[in-house]
Image (cartoon, rainbow, N blue to C red; front, side, top):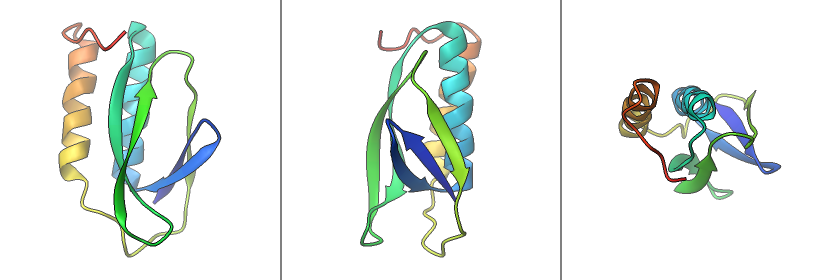
Length: 98
């Protein structure tokens, strides 16, 4: 598990989701484009939620390790989506939401 810190607010997410989000952030920054993603997370009551984030150049996102959590969600669809978006950006096939 990792905390993704965005605008000073930490959100708990899986290792795979954090890694995919950071890779996508990097690709967007290098291409100077922005996009919106809805990151799977867990609220204060342990319920699964999606948190909307604008990603792009000059928008800092940090990943800080968190204790493992048995509530880690199945985020394979989210991770695959970000992997495809990252590849599209890197290949110049995605224009973002500037």
